[in-house]
Structures are given as structure tokens and as C-alpha cells.
Length: 313
Image 1 (tube, rainbow, N blue to C red):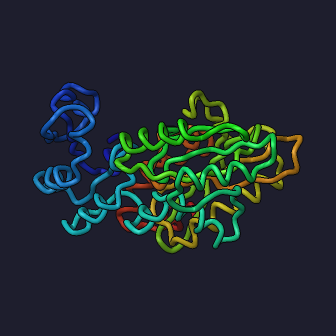
Image 2 (tube, one colour):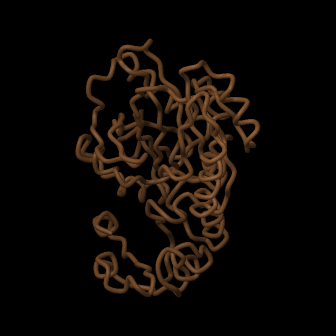
Image 3 (cartoon, one colour):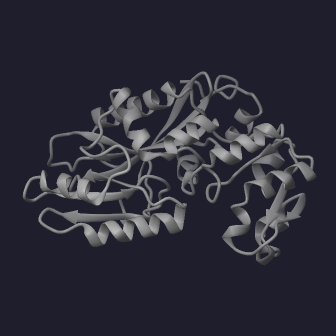
């Protein structure tokens, strides 16, 4: 809302019945109430678009949670003549399916860890685990969603049945889909993500953030630039992120995440996943680069190019 105000754009906030006194409601120029309480109120794409039309909005910013990666919401906005402040629906669909995202990385020549690239059965997971070295391990992951939900590590020699069932249950509850895939665990790896921007024709990066320090697969601390990162590895990470984004003719903001092998291992990295949206941790990059990412996002949605914003690679 601050970024919109700086651009001379009026903002309209939506809120669930139990959020009527939230800070974002008090900061908006106008307000529209949604029916229902809690998260379900914010998961009704039709209601969000209806609220935007009722208020005469010409753009809809999905934030960083709930339907921020929803291709359905993006398409509904397009049908209503409302600009979706985010990537194209096709990009959201591809990157929202981690199996398809893995295949996209392979096509772009970006390394991925050994794993499966589609809905995986328990028996297939058992077979994959049995093929790993005696000290190896695999990670069971939800094909949809993120945020550490539907994720468990299983060591070689253990039966993955219980972890598999729990992951499927968590994924269904959080994302409405219980499909899983498996990937080899890279022990002691760092988690490094690259912030990208695109205007649909060209892409650029704003360097990386290190988000290795986590609890229960939830990021706690982010550092930028990533401390002690090998210069060659950094260059290859940035190049890989741009290759992945460029092949999609990426539009708006996005983050491409990678695992980087521990310092005592052979220097290597692997694509992990992509977040085609604004992230909670975006102010870390803003503080380091001086670029207002939300303002850039709004301007890109309004038709400006990276060159117009002085952000061309």
C-alpha cells in the first residue's frame, strides 16, 4: 500500500470477518469485506475478483500467501479485465508443480538432484530409497505447495510408509492435493535463493539470499549476500536462475531456490524449487540493493519494462 501510494495509486483492502480491525484494513484507501472467517475467506478467487470489480480496481495484488500462486485467480483476473500483479497463469501452473519444475530445470541444463518428477507411489518411493547408498537418505515432498508442509526425510534402511502417509495427509490439508515425489537428500547443503524480475521479454536478477538457518523446514534468518559463497558458484547460481526465468519469458517477481553442497564437498548445486510470487523475506533484498520490489512489481504489471526501471541485466 505504501508502494502504491508513492505511485499515486489508490488501494482497496479485502478482509475476512475476523480481520476487520487489522492494520492493512486501516491503511487502505477503501475496504471490501469478504464473507467468512479465517483463511477460507481469502481462498475464494471468485469473491476476490468480485470485490475488485465492485471497487473499480484495474489491478489485483495477491500478496505472498493464500492464492498468490493461483493460476485460477490469475485467469479470473484476465477474464475480468483486471491486471494480475504476478506471473502469467501458465508460469504459475508449471512452477506450482514441482515435478514439472524439475523437468523444466533439466531442459534448461540446470542440475537437479536424483529423484522422481511426477506423482510417486509408496512402492516407487521404497524402490528409490533401496537404490541409494547405505548412508543415503531421501526427502518425501508434496508436488504442490511449499513452506515445508508435506515434507519428511527418510534414511536408507527405514520403511517410508508412515512418513509417506503423513506427507500425503499434510499436503491434502494444506494444498488440496496429496500427490508426492521423492528426491535424494544432499547432506549439509546450504539453501540459497536468487531473486529475479522479468517484464515478459527480458529478465534480471537482484542477487541471492542465504536461507539455510531453518526450523522444521521454515526459514528463520535470511542473509544477503550469501556469506562465504564461492564466487564461481554464485555466478553459476545467478546464471541458472536467469536461464530458468528467461525460458519462461518470466513476468513480475520470482525466486529460484537451490541447494549448494557443503564447503568440504565438491562444489556443486542443484535446483530445488521456484516461488513465482513476492516472498515474505523480500525486504532483505530491498535493504541490500535499495530496490523497492513491490513498487517494481506494480510498475511491471502496469506495462513498464526492466529498462524503464533501470533494472535491465
